[in-house]
Length: 452
Image 1 (tube, rainbow, N blue to C red):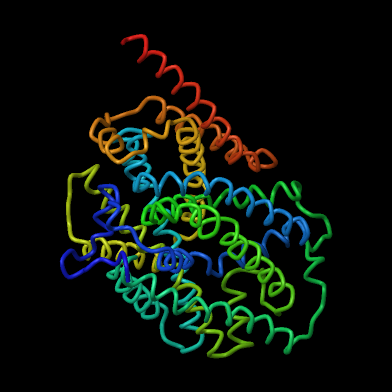
Image 2: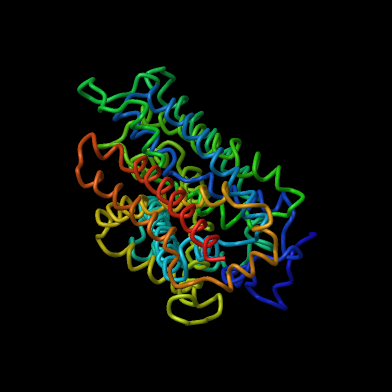
Protein backbone atom coordinates (compact mmCIF):
# COMPACT_ATOMS: atom_id res chain seq x y z
CA UNK A 1 0.00 0.00 0.00
CA UNK A 2 1.37 3.41 -0.94
CA UNK A 3 2.37 5.44 2.05
CA UNK A 4 2.75 2.47 4.35
CA UNK A 5 5.80 2.50 6.59
CA UNK A 6 8.14 -0.36 7.25
CA UNK A 7 7.82 -0.89 10.97
CA UNK A 8 10.83 -3.19 10.96
CA UNK A 9 13.09 -0.23 10.24
CA UNK A 10 11.38 2.22 12.55
CA UNK A 11 8.87 0.58 14.87
CA UNK A 12 6.15 2.90 16.01
CA UNK A 13 7.39 5.85 13.94
CA UNK A 14 3.92 7.38 13.99
CA UNK A 15 4.32 7.93 17.74
CA UNK A 16 7.61 9.71 17.07
CA UNK A 17 5.66 12.23 15.01
CA UNK A 18 4.30 13.58 18.29
CA UNK A 19 7.59 15.48 18.53
CA UNK A 20 8.00 16.53 14.88
CA UNK A 21 5.71 17.26 11.90
CA UNK A 22 4.70 14.31 9.76
CA UNK A 23 6.80 14.56 6.56
CA UNK A 24 5.12 14.28 3.16
CA UNK A 25 6.68 10.86 2.46
CA UNK A 26 5.07 9.43 5.60
CA UNK A 27 1.54 10.50 4.77
CA UNK A 28 -0.99 7.77 3.95
CA UNK A 29 -3.68 7.21 1.33
CA UNK A 30 -7.22 8.42 1.90
CA UNK A 31 -8.87 5.00 2.40
CA UNK A 32 -6.50 3.71 5.13
CA UNK A 33 -6.75 7.01 7.01
CA UNK A 34 -10.54 6.93 6.66
CA UNK A 35 -10.71 3.43 8.11
CA UNK A 36 -8.41 4.34 11.00
CA UNK A 37 -10.36 7.51 11.80
CA UNK A 38 -13.82 5.98 11.52
CA UNK A 39 -12.99 3.79 14.49
CA UNK A 40 -14.16 6.82 16.47
CA UNK A 41 -17.71 6.63 15.12
CA UNK A 42 -18.65 3.53 17.12
CA UNK A 43 -19.24 3.68 20.86
CA UNK A 44 -22.13 2.93 23.19
CA UNK A 45 -21.48 6.43 24.55
CA UNK A 46 -23.04 8.06 21.45
CA UNK A 47 -26.18 5.96 21.84
CA UNK A 48 -26.38 6.65 25.55
CA UNK A 49 -25.83 10.43 25.41
CA UNK A 50 -28.59 10.86 22.82
CA UNK A 51 -30.99 8.78 24.90
CA UNK A 52 -30.11 10.76 28.03
CA UNK A 53 -30.74 14.06 26.24
CA UNK A 54 -34.07 12.78 24.91
CA UNK A 55 -35.12 11.78 28.44
CA UNK A 56 -34.08 15.17 29.82
CA UNK A 57 -35.21 17.51 27.03
CA UNK A 58 -37.56 15.49 24.84
CA UNK A 59 -36.87 13.46 21.70
CA UNK A 60 -37.34 16.21 19.12
CA UNK A 61 -35.18 18.67 21.03
CA UNK A 62 -32.46 16.01 21.20
CA UNK A 63 -32.77 15.24 17.48
CA UNK A 64 -32.54 18.92 16.48
CA UNK A 65 -29.64 19.39 18.90
CA UNK A 66 -27.81 16.46 17.31
CA UNK A 67 -28.36 17.91 13.83
CA UNK A 68 -26.94 21.27 14.93
CA UNK A 69 -23.97 19.49 16.51
CA UNK A 70 -23.25 17.76 13.18
CA UNK A 71 -23.20 21.13 11.40
CA UNK A 72 -20.99 22.84 14.01
CA UNK A 73 -18.49 19.98 14.23
CA UNK A 74 -18.23 19.80 10.43
CA UNK A 75 -17.62 23.56 10.16
CA UNK A 76 -14.90 23.63 12.84
CA UNK A 77 -13.22 20.45 11.61
CA UNK A 78 -13.04 21.80 8.05
CA UNK A 79 -10.69 24.50 9.35
CA UNK A 80 -8.67 22.26 11.68
CA UNK A 81 -8.22 19.46 9.13
CA UNK A 82 -6.86 21.71 6.40
CA UNK A 83 -4.34 23.24 8.80
CA UNK A 84 -3.27 19.87 10.23
CA UNK A 85 -2.69 18.42 6.77
CA UNK A 86 -0.81 21.49 5.51
CA UNK A 87 1.53 21.59 8.51
CA UNK A 88 1.75 17.94 9.61
CA UNK A 89 1.61 19.16 13.22
CA UNK A 90 0.18 17.24 16.16
CA UNK A 91 -1.96 18.86 18.86
CA UNK A 92 1.14 18.99 21.06
CA UNK A 93 3.27 20.74 18.44
CA UNK A 94 0.54 23.17 17.41
CA UNK A 95 -0.01 23.98 21.09
CA UNK A 96 3.64 25.08 21.32
CA UNK A 97 2.95 27.69 18.66
CA UNK A 98 -0.30 28.75 20.35
CA UNK A 99 0.67 28.59 24.02
CA UNK A 100 4.45 28.21 24.30
CA UNK A 101 6.36 25.23 25.71
CA UNK A 102 4.79 25.30 29.19
CA UNK A 103 1.26 25.92 27.96
CA UNK A 104 1.63 23.15 25.38
CA UNK A 105 2.71 20.71 28.10
CA UNK A 106 -0.45 21.48 30.07
CA UNK A 107 -2.64 21.14 26.97
CA UNK A 108 -1.02 17.81 26.13
CA UNK A 109 -1.51 16.59 29.70
CA UNK A 110 -5.22 17.44 29.52
CA UNK A 111 -5.49 15.71 26.15
CA UNK A 112 -3.91 12.41 27.15
CA UNK A 113 -5.73 12.37 30.50
CA UNK A 114 -9.05 12.84 28.69
CA UNK A 115 -8.20 10.06 26.22
CA UNK A 116 -7.38 7.74 29.14
CA UNK A 117 -10.66 8.59 30.88
CA UNK A 118 -12.62 7.71 27.75
CA UNK A 119 -10.59 4.51 27.40
CA UNK A 120 -11.61 3.64 30.96
CA UNK A 121 -15.30 4.23 30.24
CA UNK A 122 -15.40 2.29 26.99
CA UNK A 123 -13.20 -0.49 28.33
CA UNK A 124 -15.38 -0.84 31.42
CA UNK A 125 -18.44 -1.36 29.22
CA UNK A 126 -16.73 -4.33 27.52
CA UNK A 127 -15.50 -5.74 30.83
CA UNK A 128 -18.94 -5.54 32.46
CA UNK A 129 -20.58 -7.09 29.39
CA UNK A 130 -17.99 -9.89 29.41
CA UNK A 131 -18.56 -10.46 33.12
CA UNK A 132 -22.35 -10.49 32.67
CA UNK A 133 -22.26 -12.97 29.79
CA UNK A 134 -19.49 -15.34 30.88
CA UNK A 135 -19.59 -15.04 34.67
CA UNK A 136 -15.85 -14.33 35.03
CA UNK A 137 -14.78 -11.81 37.66
CA UNK A 138 -14.68 -8.12 36.75
CA UNK A 139 -10.94 -7.71 37.56
CA UNK A 140 -10.08 -10.54 35.16
CA UNK A 141 -12.43 -9.18 32.48
CA UNK A 142 -10.92 -5.70 32.83
CA UNK A 143 -7.40 -7.10 32.61
CA UNK A 144 -8.28 -8.95 29.39
CA UNK A 145 -9.67 -5.74 27.90
CA UNK A 146 -6.63 -3.65 28.86
CA UNK A 147 -4.07 -6.22 27.65
CA UNK A 148 -5.55 -6.62 24.18
CA UNK A 149 -6.22 -2.85 23.88
CA UNK A 150 -2.56 -2.10 24.59
CA UNK A 151 -1.46 -4.83 22.18
CA UNK A 152 -3.60 -3.37 19.39
CA UNK A 153 -1.81 0.01 19.44
CA UNK A 154 1.58 -1.65 19.02
CA UNK A 155 0.55 -1.48 15.35
CA UNK A 156 0.60 1.97 13.76
CA UNK A 157 -2.09 3.93 11.93
CA UNK A 158 -0.20 3.28 8.73
CA UNK A 159 0.01 -0.49 8.84
CA UNK A 160 -2.47 -1.99 11.29
CA UNK A 161 -5.18 0.18 12.85
CA UNK A 162 -6.58 1.12 9.44
CA UNK A 163 -6.92 -2.54 8.42
CA UNK A 164 -8.23 -3.66 11.82
CA UNK A 165 -10.96 -1.03 11.88
CA UNK A 166 -11.80 -1.53 8.21
CA UNK A 167 -12.57 -5.18 8.98
CA UNK A 168 -14.72 -4.31 11.99
CA UNK A 169 -16.66 -1.37 10.46
CA UNK A 170 -19.19 -3.44 8.46
CA UNK A 171 -19.71 -5.72 11.48
CA UNK A 172 -20.54 -2.65 13.57
CA UNK A 173 -23.05 -1.43 10.96
CA UNK A 174 -24.66 -4.87 10.69
CA UNK A 175 -24.68 -5.20 14.48
CA UNK A 176 -26.45 -1.88 14.98
CA UNK A 177 -29.06 -2.78 12.36
CA UNK A 178 -29.50 -6.21 13.98
CA UNK A 179 -29.92 -4.66 17.42
CA UNK A 180 -32.77 -2.51 16.12
CA UNK A 181 -34.31 -5.34 14.10
CA UNK A 182 -34.21 -7.88 16.93
CA UNK A 183 -35.60 -5.32 19.37
CA UNK A 184 -38.58 -4.74 17.07
CA UNK A 185 -39.00 -8.50 16.63
CA UNK A 186 -38.96 -9.07 20.39
CA UNK A 187 -41.00 -6.09 21.61
CA UNK A 188 -42.74 -4.71 18.54
CA UNK A 189 -42.45 -1.26 16.97
CA UNK A 190 -43.87 1.88 18.55
CA UNK A 191 -43.31 5.53 17.71
CA UNK A 192 -43.10 6.24 21.44
CA UNK A 193 -39.36 6.84 20.97
CA UNK A 194 -40.24 10.10 19.20
CA UNK A 195 -42.15 11.25 22.29
CA UNK A 196 -39.54 10.35 24.87
CA UNK A 197 -39.14 12.84 27.70
CA UNK A 198 -38.98 13.32 31.47
CA UNK A 199 -41.24 11.15 33.61
CA UNK A 200 -43.04 14.23 34.97
CA UNK A 201 -43.76 15.44 31.46
CA UNK A 202 -41.82 18.69 31.88
CA UNK A 203 -38.60 18.83 29.87
CA UNK A 204 -35.54 20.35 31.49
CA UNK A 205 -34.98 24.03 30.77
CA UNK A 206 -32.95 24.71 27.68
CA UNK A 207 -34.57 22.50 25.04
CA UNK A 208 -32.61 22.46 21.80
CA UNK A 209 -29.95 24.76 23.30
CA UNK A 210 -29.27 22.37 26.16
CA UNK A 211 -28.88 19.45 23.75
CA UNK A 212 -26.58 21.37 21.43
CA UNK A 213 -24.37 22.58 24.28
CA UNK A 214 -24.13 19.04 25.67
CA UNK A 215 -22.24 18.03 22.53
CA UNK A 216 -19.73 20.82 23.17
CA UNK A 217 -18.68 18.69 26.13
CA UNK A 218 -17.01 16.26 23.73
CA UNK A 219 -15.12 18.80 21.63
CA UNK A 220 -12.07 16.74 22.49
CA UNK A 221 -13.04 14.92 19.27
CA UNK A 222 -11.69 18.00 17.48
CA UNK A 223 -8.32 17.39 19.09
CA UNK A 224 -8.66 13.75 18.00
CA UNK A 225 -9.37 15.05 14.50
CA UNK A 226 -6.27 17.23 14.43
CA UNK A 227 -3.95 14.41 15.53
CA UNK A 228 -5.34 11.99 12.93
CA UNK A 229 -5.62 14.46 10.03
CA UNK A 230 -1.87 15.21 10.04
CA UNK A 231 -1.33 11.86 8.31
CA UNK A 232 -3.43 12.97 5.32
CA UNK A 233 -1.85 13.76 1.97
CA UNK A 234 -1.97 17.31 0.66
CA UNK A 235 -3.74 16.22 -2.52
CA UNK A 236 -6.52 14.65 -0.40
CA UNK A 237 -7.16 17.73 1.73
CA UNK A 238 -10.61 18.49 0.26
CA UNK A 239 -11.76 14.89 0.72
CA UNK A 240 -10.62 14.79 4.34
CA UNK A 241 -12.03 18.23 5.22
CA UNK A 242 -15.43 17.63 3.62
CA UNK A 243 -15.99 13.87 3.88
CA UNK A 244 -13.68 11.88 6.14
CA UNK A 245 -13.56 14.33 9.05
CA UNK A 246 -16.62 16.30 7.93
CA UNK A 247 -20.41 16.16 7.98
CA UNK A 248 -20.76 12.50 6.77
CA UNK A 249 -18.65 11.28 9.69
CA UNK A 250 -20.60 13.23 12.30
CA UNK A 251 -23.90 12.36 10.66
CA UNK A 252 -23.08 8.72 11.42
CA UNK A 253 -21.39 9.35 14.78
CA UNK A 254 -23.93 11.67 16.37
CA UNK A 255 -27.12 11.52 14.33
CA UNK A 256 -27.55 7.91 13.23
CA UNK A 257 -26.08 6.50 16.43
CA UNK A 258 -28.16 9.00 18.38
CA UNK A 259 -31.42 7.99 16.69
CA UNK A 260 -30.59 4.34 17.38
CA UNK A 261 -29.85 5.17 21.01
CA UNK A 262 -33.14 6.98 21.51
CA UNK A 263 -35.06 4.15 19.86
CA UNK A 264 -33.34 1.42 21.89
CA UNK A 265 -33.73 3.33 25.16
CA UNK A 266 -37.46 3.67 24.53
CA UNK A 267 -37.96 0.12 23.22
CA UNK A 268 -35.73 -2.09 25.41
CA UNK A 269 -36.95 -2.87 28.92
CA UNK A 270 -34.15 -1.78 31.29
CA UNK A 271 -33.80 -1.92 35.06
CA UNK A 272 -33.46 1.49 36.69
CA UNK A 273 -32.29 4.58 34.82
CA UNK A 274 -31.07 4.41 31.25
CA UNK A 275 -27.28 4.17 31.11
CA UNK A 276 -24.58 2.71 28.88
CA UNK A 277 -24.63 -0.46 30.98
CA UNK A 278 -28.41 -0.83 31.17
CA UNK A 279 -28.61 -0.65 27.36
CA UNK A 280 -25.72 -3.15 27.09
CA UNK A 281 -27.43 -5.64 29.42
CA UNK A 282 -30.68 -5.29 27.51
CA UNK A 283 -28.93 -5.84 24.17
CA UNK A 284 -27.20 -8.97 25.43
CA UNK A 285 -30.52 -10.24 26.73
CA UNK A 286 -32.11 -9.76 23.29
CA UNK A 287 -29.16 -10.71 21.07
CA UNK A 288 -27.20 -13.18 23.24
CA UNK A 289 -23.65 -13.82 22.02
CA UNK A 290 -24.25 -11.55 19.03
CA UNK A 291 -25.00 -8.74 21.48
CA UNK A 292 -21.73 -9.32 23.31
CA UNK A 293 -19.85 -9.32 20.00
CA UNK A 294 -21.58 -6.08 18.96
CA UNK A 295 -20.55 -4.41 22.22
CA UNK A 296 -16.99 -5.70 21.82
CA UNK A 297 -16.74 -4.39 18.25
CA UNK A 298 -18.16 -0.95 19.06
CA UNK A 299 -16.04 -0.39 22.15
CA UNK A 300 -12.82 -1.92 20.81
CA UNK A 301 -12.93 0.21 17.66
CA UNK A 302 -13.12 3.49 19.54
CA UNK A 303 -10.61 2.34 22.13
CA UNK A 304 -7.96 1.94 19.42
CA UNK A 305 -8.23 5.74 19.09
CA UNK A 306 -8.39 6.38 22.84
CA UNK A 307 -5.32 4.28 23.65
CA UNK A 308 -3.36 5.45 20.61
CA UNK A 309 -3.88 9.17 21.29
CA UNK A 310 -3.26 8.73 25.01
CA UNK A 311 0.10 7.10 24.25
CA UNK A 312 1.05 9.68 21.59
CA UNK A 313 0.37 12.63 23.84
CA UNK A 314 1.81 11.03 26.97
CA UNK A 315 5.05 10.53 25.03
CA UNK A 316 5.02 14.17 23.93
CA UNK A 317 4.30 15.41 27.45
CA UNK A 318 7.11 13.34 28.93
CA UNK A 319 9.57 14.70 26.37
CA UNK A 320 8.45 18.33 26.66
CA UNK A 321 7.83 18.64 30.39
CA UNK A 322 10.12 16.00 31.88
CA UNK A 323 12.79 15.42 29.26
CA UNK A 324 12.04 11.68 29.39
CA UNK A 325 12.25 9.56 26.25
CA UNK A 326 11.13 5.94 26.00
CA UNK A 327 10.07 3.46 23.28
CA UNK A 328 6.50 3.26 22.04
CA UNK A 329 5.90 0.01 23.93
CA UNK A 330 6.61 1.72 27.25
CA UNK A 331 4.02 4.48 26.78
CA UNK A 332 1.40 2.04 25.55
CA UNK A 333 1.96 -0.08 28.68
CA UNK A 334 1.88 2.94 31.00
CA UNK A 335 -1.47 3.96 29.51
CA UNK A 336 -2.72 0.40 30.06
CA UNK A 337 -1.61 0.34 33.70
CA UNK A 338 -3.29 3.69 34.46
CA UNK A 339 -6.47 2.61 32.68
CA UNK A 340 -6.59 -0.67 34.64
CA UNK A 341 -6.06 1.07 37.99
CA UNK A 342 -8.90 3.49 37.21
CA UNK A 343 -11.13 0.62 36.09
CA UNK A 344 -10.52 -1.06 39.46
CA UNK A 345 -11.02 2.07 41.58
CA UNK A 346 -14.43 3.54 42.42
CA UNK A 347 -13.61 6.88 40.86
CA UNK A 348 -16.21 7.25 38.13
CA UNK A 349 -18.01 10.17 39.75
CA UNK A 350 -14.71 12.03 40.08
CA UNK A 351 -13.74 11.20 36.50
CA UNK A 352 -17.05 12.57 35.21
CA UNK A 353 -16.42 15.81 37.09
CA UNK A 354 -12.83 15.97 35.83
CA UNK A 355 -14.06 15.47 32.26
CA UNK A 356 -16.49 18.37 32.67
CA UNK A 357 -13.67 20.64 33.83
CA UNK A 358 -11.23 19.46 31.20
CA UNK A 359 -13.90 19.84 28.52
CA UNK A 360 -13.96 23.57 29.23
CA UNK A 361 -10.19 23.81 28.67
CA UNK A 362 -10.61 21.84 25.43
CA UNK A 363 -13.26 24.27 24.15
CA UNK A 364 -10.91 27.17 24.94
CA UNK A 365 -8.10 25.46 23.01
CA UNK A 366 -10.33 24.95 19.97
CA UNK A 367 -11.41 28.60 20.06
CA UNK A 368 -7.79 29.82 20.12
CA UNK A 369 -6.78 27.37 17.40
CA UNK A 370 -9.59 28.58 15.11
CA UNK A 371 -8.73 32.26 15.55
CA UNK A 372 -5.05 31.56 14.98
CA UNK A 373 -5.64 29.50 11.83
CA UNK A 374 -8.12 31.94 10.33
CA UNK A 375 -5.85 34.92 10.95
CA UNK A 376 -2.48 33.51 9.84
CA UNK A 377 -1.13 33.83 6.32
CA UNK A 378 -0.57 30.87 4.01
CA UNK A 379 3.21 31.39 4.21
CA UNK A 380 3.12 30.62 7.93
CA UNK A 381 2.04 27.03 7.28
CA UNK A 382 4.77 26.01 4.84
CA UNK A 383 7.24 23.36 5.97
CA UNK A 384 10.26 25.57 6.61
CA UNK A 385 8.32 28.32 8.38
CA UNK A 386 6.57 25.79 10.62
CA UNK A 387 9.88 24.26 11.71
CA UNK A 388 11.32 27.72 12.35
CA UNK A 389 8.36 28.69 14.52
CA UNK A 390 8.72 25.51 16.56
CA UNK A 391 12.42 26.15 17.13
CA UNK A 392 11.63 29.72 18.28
CA UNK A 393 8.98 28.66 20.77
CA UNK A 394 9.28 30.51 24.12
CA UNK A 395 8.24 29.04 27.48
CA UNK A 396 5.00 31.06 27.47
CA UNK A 397 3.12 32.79 24.70
CA UNK A 398 1.17 35.49 26.51
CA UNK A 399 -1.63 35.83 23.96
CA UNK A 400 -2.40 32.11 23.76
CA UNK A 401 -1.91 31.20 27.42
CA UNK A 402 -3.75 34.32 28.62
CA UNK A 403 -6.72 33.71 26.34
CA UNK A 404 -6.77 30.01 27.23
CA UNK A 405 -6.93 30.59 30.97
CA UNK A 406 -9.33 33.56 30.79
CA UNK A 407 -11.70 31.56 28.60
CA UNK A 408 -11.47 28.52 30.87
CA UNK A 409 -11.95 30.70 33.97
CA UNK A 410 -15.15 32.18 32.52
CA UNK A 411 -16.45 28.70 31.69
CA UNK A 412 -15.57 27.23 35.07
CA UNK A 413 -17.22 30.14 36.89
CA UNK A 414 -20.50 29.50 35.06
CA UNK A 415 -20.12 25.74 35.53
CA UNK A 416 -19.76 26.10 39.30
CA UNK A 417 -22.64 28.60 39.41
CA UNK A 418 -24.89 25.71 38.41
CA UNK A 419 -28.49 25.87 37.30
CA UNK A 420 -29.24 27.65 34.03
CA UNK A 421 -25.85 29.35 34.15
CA UNK A 422 -24.06 26.04 33.69
CA UNK A 423 -25.52 25.59 30.19
CA UNK A 424 -23.61 28.71 29.11
CA UNK A 425 -20.22 27.54 30.39
CA UNK A 426 -18.91 26.08 27.11
CA UNK A 427 -20.26 28.84 24.82
CA UNK A 428 -18.89 31.53 27.18
CA UNK A 429 -15.52 29.77 27.19
CA UNK A 430 -15.46 29.80 23.39
CA UNK A 431 -16.39 33.48 23.09
CA UNK A 432 -14.05 34.76 25.81
CA UNK A 433 -11.07 32.69 24.61
CA UNK A 434 -11.48 33.58 20.93
CA UNK A 435 -12.04 37.32 21.49
CA UNK A 436 -9.20 37.58 24.02
CA UNK A 437 -6.79 35.75 21.72
CA UNK A 438 -7.73 37.92 18.74
CA UNK A 439 -7.22 41.14 20.74
CA UNK A 440 -3.97 40.06 22.41
CA UNK A 441 -2.49 38.68 19.19
CA UNK A 442 -3.35 41.88 17.32
CA UNK A 443 -1.78 44.02 20.01
CA UNK A 444 1.30 41.77 20.11
CA UNK A 445 1.68 42.05 16.34
CA UNK A 446 1.45 45.87 16.51
CA UNK A 447 4.08 45.93 19.27
CA UNK A 448 6.42 43.75 17.24
CA UNK A 449 6.04 46.01 14.20
CA UNK A 450 6.69 49.11 16.32
CA UNK A 451 9.94 47.60 17.66
CA UNK A 452 11.18 47.09 14.11
